[in-house]
Length: 511
Image 1 (spheres, rainbow, N blue to C red):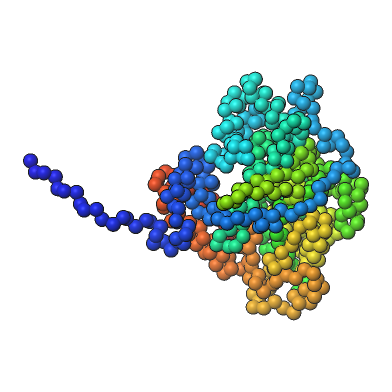
Image 2 (spheres, rainbow, N blue to C red; image 1 turned 90 degrees about the vertical axis):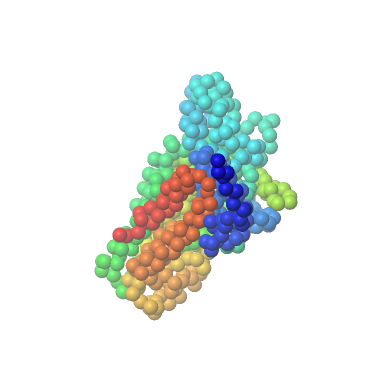
């Protein structure tokens, strides 16, 4: 019998796949841990979380409490003194014979089935799918009904028993600071109470249709696609491109050509005043709006009536302060949140739009030849150059005064389709710009095109170069996925996290 050959001498450790891919080594310093966490999230069907674990910079490594305080300014708490008190009163309790609540154990069970697995725990350690899900495995059981009536209903009604744990804590959550690396700064995300998020998910399906009708039909020339509209970003981009393409092929006034004026809002979700949101739901002004055109106690045109059904929930969450808990690397901080909508709130985007939409509708009443296309805080005005610029100028003023928003004028822009072939903007640009000294808009960088919601609009060469850059950015993430040890998970992440980004560009680019 011939003995087997001796095993080969141990060689150097194999070179990791990512080491030769031109990736910043700092992002790979903990790749083994990233891969383990990402694969666990992917096996739990939380693919978006798995991608973020692999490719994002993660939490800020420094104590970001000062930056978080700056992103959560202190505002005076809103009032409902001018509103109908019945609107904000809690609904009838479930045991009342006349109760007609949208919140039921079955609705909660359906929401739990769609809740992501492996998500972050709330400030009390609860996770919706893992910890609350078993309580509703049988939505007709007495156990499910008890938890629905005694806990979930408290959030839905916006009221808790007097001896409840600190209420601002229940309406607050864990505040995390995500690094924007390689860019400076942090992005705050508030992980709210699991029961609160679950209740919001349970009642959301009944709001989608009326919200879509309101945000796209309340005014014939205002289209807000971020609330209730499926694939709203694609609709916003395609409508904007269509309006600009129509202007390109129709007769154009050379002295006042069609233009798109785009506003850029800084940290809008965290800083929008809460009073306009509550006034929009109630339909009554509590402060002066539109430069004193509307006074306190008067009816507020274009009110957001579809959200009246969740008014008690909104009042509980946003009439009072909430406590955000931030765990820094070496300390724990507590921040009182009195402004904006929580970015972890299921209703956050819809409530932001509810505060913004009446202003846009009333603004378009005063600018009858301008069309407004918006996706949350991305607002574009399309019309004749001087008219679109005037609408943006007034919008910026009212957004600062009424909504307490900050406008980033350096990122706002103007684009004129009929100037796309020019190397420099014509003298007309300077003439119109002089009429609006408080709203400077750069045109030189956007002569050939601009990006709206990540999609390029402009001449073919601008679109091609933008798409090349987008594809390069997408493919730069592929080495991260190559670090996975499970081929099936690798395929699923490519199929459901990478391919949809390419699909979005296909849906929003003119063939």
